[in-house]
Amino acid sequence: MTDNNKHRLEWIGLRFRTRRNELYYSLRDVSNLTGISTGTLNGIEKGRDLTMTNFLLLCHSLEIQPKVFFQDDITFNPPYSLSPDVQERISINKKLDQLVYHSDFFHHPKRVAEVLNELGVDKSQSNKFSVYLSAYCEEGALTYEQQGNYKEYRKKGDVTWKIPENG
Image (cartoon, one colour):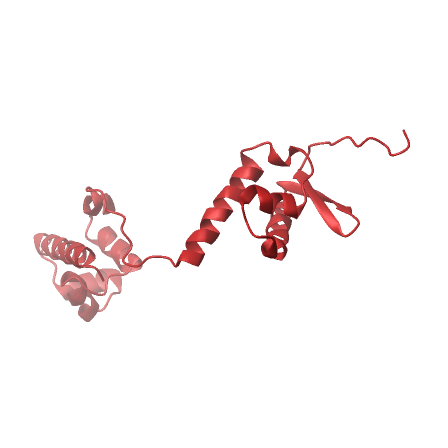
């Protein structure tokens, strides 16, 4: 746990203890109101053992609006970082979402190879992207037409006219 979170939990615990004392409740009284053991309540008041369920039970029982605890913005800095592979996957998925939902890229049928080229992804990833594109089809954003050994993907509802081969 980061120091920032530790201090925040200690402050929340102190706020719960202060309110409990304002109401002249003992730990046993709060335990009877919430179903939380006195040992756990003691830990919460010291900045430990706080779950979201217990937080909400205490807010309700001690008549404290939860927003009181979060008046200041929380700085969003996770204590750990995602691996480069995961960061790349997320970046590519964002780009793919952009192509599917916010561009005209799929207004004309596209093969997986064309999608990979557009995204700057190595062709060795074609099986993975076939799965990704199939998921868009399942959710209704794309549709596909089988063309021999490969599929052509396009926006669902877009009609592409093909010129007949004989004329």
